[in-house]
Image (cartoon, rainbow, N blue to C red; front, side, top):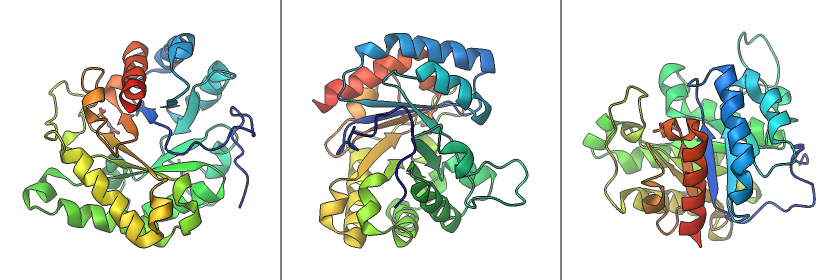
Length: 275
Ligand code: PEP
């Protein structure tokens, strides 16, 4: 198995066992100047983050080198928003894990925007997950049902299928190295200002428990117990703590993470709630 080539974390720091995780997915929201400004602000306030939470920022690809320099020797970890399922080849506009492995520790795969807008199937997502793992990084695999699937009461079936596709590509020993993010598509912010609906209390934690069960059935309880599973869907500084129900290991945050102050508050809320 290749060693993690991520250079921010000294190699002696062990991969934490279910250390709470908060991930900023900046999508394509910020300009380069805004990205650098927010990253500088996050770095300045990073010291207030308890060591008990791992905070990851995923900017647009071209910003990765700049943010790598900004976060150097800070506790903030860098992530990428996607990677191609092949290592190299005729894939115009795509990014290989080889381009990422010296820059980032985490790579998001299977985000619903990639599934919906780029036609990514469960099989493609599973292959991307495998490619990221093989390159020594940690995939954050997004799963979740659409509004229509929810209305048809197909949530468990959809999530089982999406998680199952990943598990078939995953040697069980590697299970603790991946992260799942349960992101009900209907709860994800559109960036248009209209708030998306939110799951009822307990609902997200229940599906997250189900994901752990599917992983456990496929990979064994021992390994599934070490798997981190996040919630994502319009999490804000006000709502973050409420989502940290038992079994929930943190949050994947889109819109609200683009403001440094909000992201730091969310990370603190998650750290406090996990204590
Ligand atoms: C996301 O798209 O991963 C996400 C969670 O976005 P938002 O927080 O804006 O709903």
